[in-house]
Length: 207
Image (cartoon, rainbow, N blue to C red; front, side, top):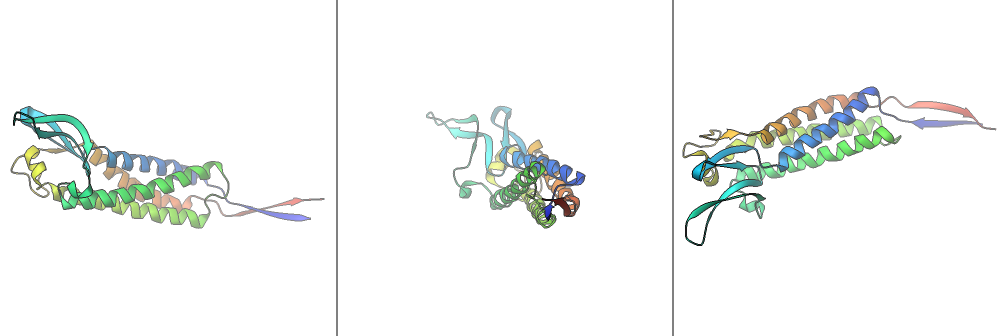
């Protein structure tokens, strides 16, 4: 009796797609979580860093009424505490984009080891999700500078700081990681169309 065994495996481009998918997800998620998007200084030239929902080193009034800088990193308690509406939107859209990239990345890695995890159609859906994620991350990166006119940023970047105008601050490396991740997600989208081989039919004789 002839038995048809239909199997779908990743192509050579598919293995590269899986690897690049995880690299892209790692870059975006790391850039999103670490608060090194914007670098400024305040009291006594202390370095201050801002992310979308976290910051490092912030001023606090001590028991004597003096303003001191607390040298630690932390996140804002709620989304409403994030000092700019643009940053609040940025935190949400980039977070959603990172979640999509992680979902596709882990699925693609599993497909390297397990048959039939990703079909040709599923790979294309994954690519579309990566394209959507890239657009969300890129939109967040484009929107982030619109929040440079907030009070907290002006304290670290000077009164010349305005929307899309840095003042005395400079862009830091987490922001660049997120931007690179957004570009790579578009490359992943293109690779997803070549990620799988066509279904092959294997016939075996069974007595």
